[in-house]
Length: 209
Image 1 (cartoon, one colour):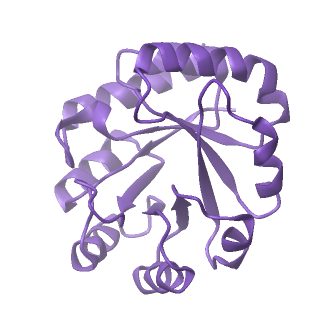
Image 2 (cartoon, rainbow, N blue to C red):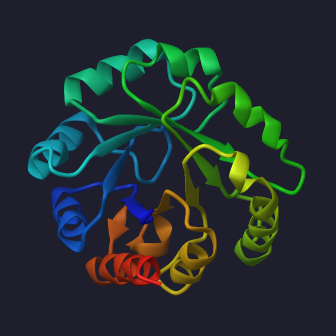
């Protein structure tokens, strides 16, 4: 299986086009309040239309009402919904579009929690807690994944990824996809086209090994 790439936190049409041109498999639009990458509905509509349904668009939410999520997903014709809060399996099941559920992974994470989401999600995301240092966190998760990955559904790996480290991670773990936002930015919400190209090239290179 070839690892895919999701470029998350796209905030403008130019960056969306650049991500698509670089070979991104998914583009993420953030609808989380107070996020520096939050997009307006009008801007999100422009981005979706610019991609012309050639690259799947993921709407990212955190503890939003299910009615709001379903309305935005329908109005914008999104492809998937990504949850980053405390959404229950029942919320995921009530979501009209396919769901990606994020789990914040630390040393004490109870991997059995994922079992309750298996039937109501399409994918999961293993995400880095904001209070964890990247290097130590990635080492911890890599160790845990070596013991648990055979029991996991298809997962995205997110948090602390850059063009410099993603190739090694993909070679070692072969996740379904990797998810990047800040690791390819010049400022929050502003992507660097060259870094996007380098990131995707590193994943593609690792896929050939």
